[in-house]
Length: 166
Image (cartoon, rainbow, N blue to C red; front, side, top):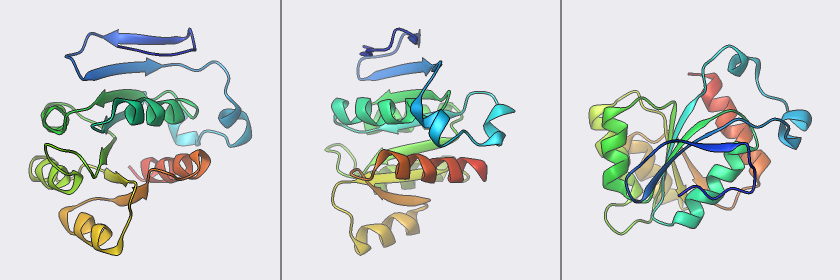
């Protein structure tokens, strides 16, 4: 279910339980004025991002941060198995996965996605970042390992830079 305080957010398709697809077209945001959207986004269709986190609140919070920046087509799921199914069947510009999930951890999910989509850009999000996790995630194909507790503008800058290279 879509939970938004902004009336311009709209549900673009019905989704199975545990997954919400959101297409958001912001009319005015402070991030657009203060930080600017890279020129590459003006010429592209809406960039697609898949967020996989077993905590619905974290999915919603991360999607809220992303909505501040651009016209992203965001797909959320709380199931790593559903995330894998979506990654196999659809094209995403960026996939962001939580590390700590009960069914499958984020590194296992990265490995499974990379087996079928070797060029996928995947970031692992974690509350407890360590050198061991970074090394393991990079070995399996993650592009970055990021703290869930970064400042929103820092996270958005990392995402913009990564998507600009696509």
